[in-house]
Image (cartoon, rainbow, N blue to C red; front, side, top):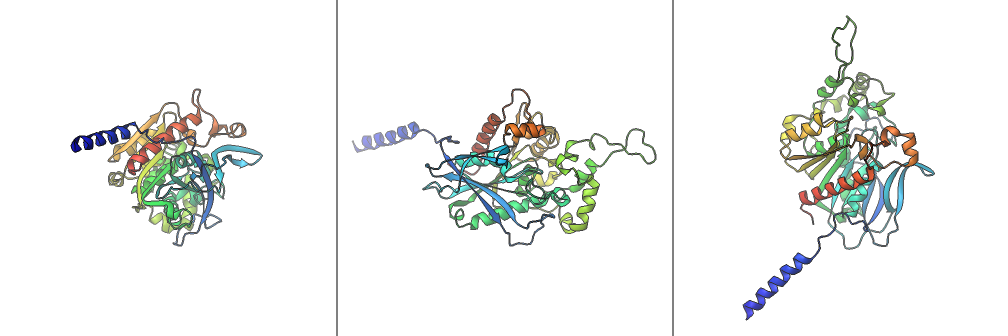
Amino acid sequence: MKRLLALAMVVGFVAAAAAKPKPLLLDPNAKVGVVTRVFHPAAQRNWRGADKHELDAVVWYPAIDTAIETKQFIGAPDNPLFEAGSAMPHAAFAPHMERLPLVLLSHGTGGSALQMAWLGTALARAGYIAVAVDHPGNNANGKLTPEGFALWWERATDLSNALDAMLKDEEFGPRIDPTRIAAAGYSLGGYTVLELAGAQTDISRFFDYCRPKPGPNPGPDQRQDGPAGDSAVCRVPEMRGLGSIDDILQATRKTSRESLARSGESFRDPRIKAVYALAPALAFTQTQESLHSIHIPVEMVVGTEDRIAPAKENADYLRANLRSGRETTLPGVSHSTFLDTCTPTGTQALPQYCTELPGIDRASVHAKVASMVVEFLDRSLKWR
């Protein structure tokens, strides 16, 4: 009889567990809080010609159920350019939520921490803490500098320093599980998070790729751009006003020879346990040997209409050289689709960043990709 009762109890527990619904990966009713932070790294570092020697950051986190969210924006308050998700500034933290995973977020060339808001708020609704930084010399909120564009590998130090600060933060530090840290980045941010995973750079690949190539019948002093010289990655609009690729390199040599000399070193951060790259750029500058050595989980997503960081020389190249790099391709999606959703003003003022192909809804793409990222992180960090 006792055995029968014990068996019945086991069956009952199993049935109850099977009947219990799985928690939503992205609960639309979960509330999000948002705060800003200014980090002052103690370690000596390269500030890439930035006016301010500090890291400005935005943090999204799970908020208390009674939090009253408002729409957040990028741009002038009375006429913003981008929507930056919904959140409550300085909201109380959700109770009974401790030892949460943290995700470092890296924006693209000339972007900003807030351009990662669509993903940061989604991660917070899924129970993650997400923090994004403005990369010095290469963000929309500060002076754009030659060093900010030329010293890409230094961006990895921004995220490592931000992680140091978050773990020491009085409010967030005790709530972070230091064994469950990940990173996700868009465009040059995708390159950045792969550096954290262990990728190493050969900068000669970029300058060789982007220098003008001789035409079929060049004169003695003539040089014509070949296909590589015309590539969008060599003529980033945000670099306008800083001169040619060679001009930027020459200016950087005057101020940052030490950083240039260590461009090929490893910036791996062993605390990072998984990375997700969205439309990664400059991946072709990362060496095959270093990519082979990456042991943590890596996933990527890219659009078929990406002309800035086409898959062939970026995501496809990474997938071919990573041990377990999974790649998802989204039909009709362009490079800018991974930016925040544009307001009507933004669409009119910045059509190059806001216009989608017919049938592509940016908000819907964001929702799909955010679910993909959360599912990957849950699995890779063995969380939930």
